[in-house]
Amino acid sequence: MHPNSIGKLIGVGLILLVLVIAAAQSTYVVDPGFRGVQVTLGKVSEQFKPEGFGTKQPFVSTIIPIPVRQLTRELPAECYSSDLQQVNVQLRVLYRIPEMSVVRIYKEYSGDPFDSLIAPRVQEALKEVTAMQSAEQIVKQREHIKTKALAAAKEKIGTILDVEDLVLENITLSKELETAIESKMVQEQEAAKARFTQQKAQIEADTAIIKAKGEAEAIRIRGEALRDTPGLIQLQIVEKWDGKAPLVIGGSENTGTNFILPLGTPASAPVRK
Image (cartoon, helix red, strand yellow):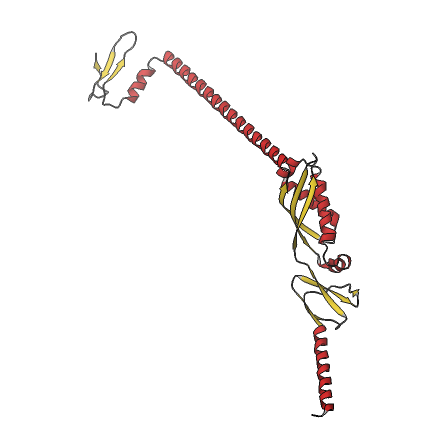
């Protein structure tokens, strides 16, 4: 083959290669859950790129993906309680970059605002909240601490980011303080148990007194009824008789007569004794 022909083929191949690379460089894809920031020769576009396929200027433009889905990062915090006890907190921060803040986040925080924006403000908020509570309250009122710290962190960060939640995974105190708090909690439980036992005994005593008074009152009323109506007991005996066993009924005080209802004798035919 002629040397000129070989040179032409190489030239054509190089041109095709350049065209293929240029075509590849002129397209981009933004994955779901991300937004793209276009940088052209060091200049950042003010409008973000939505997810999906798009075109850009080859070789001079770059699309930087910024996540807009929820992110989770661990964060340690060393705090002090109102009684000057050291409290170490291990927490997780759940946050999200709003779509309209994507370009600003890239410009001001290089696309990752956690270390420079979120972490210091969350730690500051948590320290302010724990400084107003004793170490014992911090341990017992974890949900309250989290709620107050979350509200304070949101206020400090503003609308540039959405801090969605704080998860307090672990709260660590000194061994001596943990032992003291545990001992106090045991004493409180024992005191509560003693109060319950005392209240139960008092209720049982009150119930016994009420029952005794009721029985005494019933006996008194029954005695008065028998005294005022002597024939009442005879009537009760007759009403309870089943017609099988002999029944003796005392007569009046004036006659001293007893009535006997023997076995098998109808009640309408008493035998006088």
